[in-house]
Length: 423
View 1 (cartoon, rainbow, N blue to C red):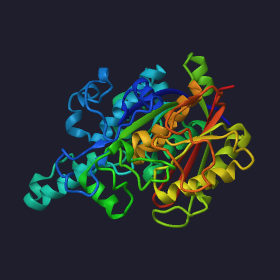
View 2 (view 1 turned 180 degrees about the horizontal axis):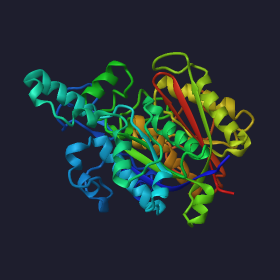
View 3 (view 1 turned 90 degrees about the horizontal axis):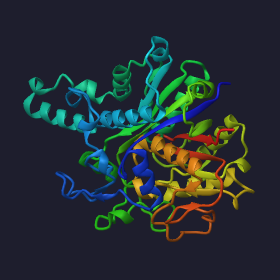
View 4 (view 1 turned 180 degrees about the vertical axis):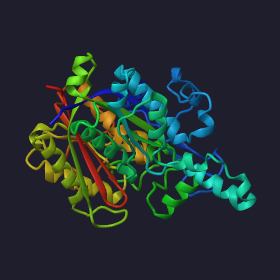
């Protein structure tokens, strides 16, 4: 089977834009969750906080669309596509991959999805149509809202003629996109894949819907930075976030031949279904455990080979318990050696982008031998939580040989990715 490595990274997140700025903020325990009260439509909602992308110039770690878009892009692209374009351009530059020949372009593909796409375009167009009728509907409406349009725009911008694919599996989208892209390379459909997830869902309607589902942290409007509390005894729900994460995956020998910088090898990809409930995991975390077990099997590694798990842990009462049980079942006999953290305390939950952004954090943890912290973790609800969850501050000093990152989504869909240092 062809080996697949990571040669480029790109990020747009609530902690900043650009991998260097975001990673520094993560390991220095910064938080990107803010109040949304001053934005139109949010103040009257029971929850008015979110992990919003920081606006401003790239030189200050912010996102300004005009720094990334070509002429006319602002008319034809939705915000989630703009985030994806930024992250992809960063990752391609980082990888030093700019195919020129027809063969190189035919061997380069894109696998990049979104969970919700452009909710804002759906909402505003529906409102305009309701009040003003057909004549006011933009001809760009449908192209803007299609989940695969971020991937499509990237193929057109760069001339990539390999696989053009987009997953949309709720909060597992980013992880599925990276895992699927790995398989395209393994099965010789491509030599290079640009893969990840993007989301721009901070909208009053989205928060209203998640509030009605009782999914959000609802008691921290005055203290946004304390709201996302993975594994903590006072966790009460997730915090909605937005952004994008993109990686460049490459066949190992292809990367070696051109002297590419290699961050890590992606060795395993495990998928599963809970077959249980629309939004809640089974209490024993069986679906999550199956995904991790299959990722390890695909990687041909054992629990003893893994030093770190980047948990999906969103800060919900049920979900964090179920995932903790799943991790403990997979790593039974190795509890003293495994470290677990959830970076959602810093970024909130980026929904369809979460798996890709967290995969990048996992890759950087491997590369730098630094465990990113779990923010707002001050105590536990019961003695089941007895692992090292990297509370409050980053940890270093121990080599990280291999790591898992988990993503789970509504509908009971699960994925786990396994990354390792290149041997």
